View 1 (tube, one colour):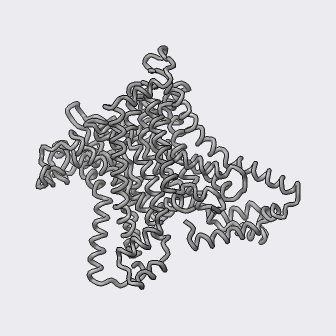
View 2: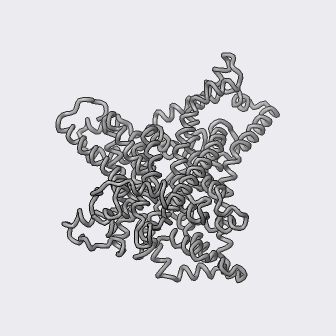
View 3: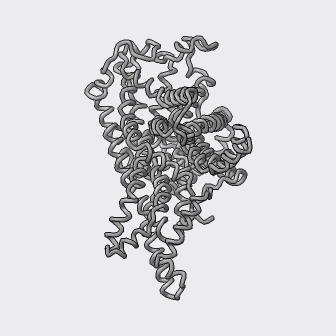
Length: 283
Length: 336
């Protein structure tokens, strides 16, 4: 158990084995594609896990070489579209969740129910009509044309997560501060905002993951480099010649888009876990 | 899922709200003042909650209505002038096509059932390990399993694809001693092997989510109950089946339903690894290839609508027969 600190030798061994198994499970596929990204063209067929000659050539190809145009524009699109969609979703969801947690008004249940329904909605069912509509009104293959559908992916979970967070905030602190002479705005800013910020921040990370992961909208609603995000661009990578598989370039690109995920996970593991479990399980 | 701390928090919250002058005014109920208060609160509520609500509606309700409408027409983008109303003809065409539609539906159901079952077992194991782990390694474990959760599905698909690929993979080399695996095995040429790798990638990527939900469920099982069972001499197995599992039934149900709905929409992994070859086409991919690929909007919309109806059915069955209370907590005050 977590509480008694001393372990017997046998238990220690057991835990070491378990930890190694879990770490292997979680990181092995990432390690495999990382190793592949350092393989030379000749090594790609060597049927081994590690490259025999380590090379940066694949990274050079997508960052400064031939595939630069393809990858860097897609990377810029991904970052721009994802960050804007995340920002808008978190702002709107914060307002919405505040109203749900703090105010009494008819229709509260409808809003939460709608969020739930939207979150289980099959993306592919709405993509055809959007494809058609976007082409008619000029949103096809634009940033805005992806930001809007990304909101439908990020808003529901943001609203649920934030509503769960906000319900736990001791709102009477606000009154206490007002009694102590603060204005309503001061009370809100000094007493409530510091308590709410961690929840808002955690929600932003989760929303970012979801938008960053999108593939269906990315391949369906874009056709050129104008707005195509990385996951969609990866599916369109081609090799240096028609006889070469783009394996190395794709692996390198895959590693680069995984770096933001790993950094966020390393820095905010605790917050992400609490955010995910609060939104989904807490009543 | 009302546990003791939850209830006390709720009571505190209600107490706080009672002391709040807004609600006490409402409770005292003095005529016009009360309705005005309620009205202005309702207006404020909709004013700040409204934008999010209407965007969600606009991006889903409108397109699905449009899809239902489009599905009643014979309509190809390549010849937009030949659009004609055919009523349910598209649905008849799809439903009578055993080769394409029923096969895709079968594969989708297979993937959903197998991945959810495996993920439930694996996820429960992971949750138990994290629940019992010493604080010092708990952080490391959670960090590690969040990597698959956060990674892009397309990246996961490529990682698994390259591991097994006949040209660039090492799996055939490493596992050559297993009967049936040798350097000539092309995993993506046969249905059985291809769908196995697709499901492996799907399972790897999404098990952490289930594990975290189950971990939260485990944390809600009262420690006293487990201790009492131990004192009464219950074996590990009895503790599991009699105390722990029954107490986290709600968490398990929610996790299974969410994952089942998610797995039913599987698209990215199949698109990257086989693009539907070797009989691995799933419903989402069929809808995509019909409408976006071949620009047959009418037919594609009909597939989309059928997929949507399937998801609704899964929800209805879960709520009706398994009594999954997804809506628990839709009331802000938490009262049920």
